[in-house]
Length: 141
Image (cartoon, rainbow, N blue to C red; front, side, top):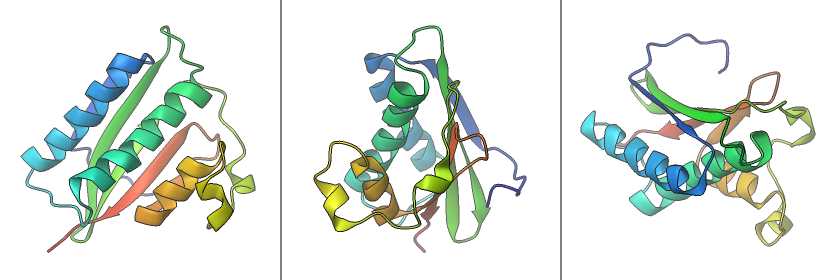
C-alpha cells in the first residue's frame, strides 16, 4: 500500500497539542463527508480510528512537542477504499514488531490497545521509518 502514489484530496497540519488533536479529527471527518465519501464505518468508529492514529502521532511520535506538527491527508485508493495518512515528526519506530493482528488481550492493555482498535476497523501499515501510518478505510456503496 505504501508504494502507491495517489492524488491527495485534502491535507492539514497542526501542532502537537491536545486542543488541536480534537480539531484535526473533526475537520478530517468533515472534509471526508464534504467530498461525498462514505466510509463503511459509523461516525463514532471513524472518530475512534482517527483519534488513535492522531493521538499516537502526537504522543509517541512528537512527544506532545508544540514545536512539532502532525499532518493528516487522505485520498481515494480506488472505488472501494479511502486512505487516510497520518505523519509525525518523531524518530519513528520499528513497525515490524507490531504483528499483523494484535491479540484480544491488547483491548485492555495500556499499550497496544490503539493498534488493536485501528486493526479492528481498517487495514493499517507504516512507512519504513515508522513515522507515518496509513489507514485503509472501506468505502460503502
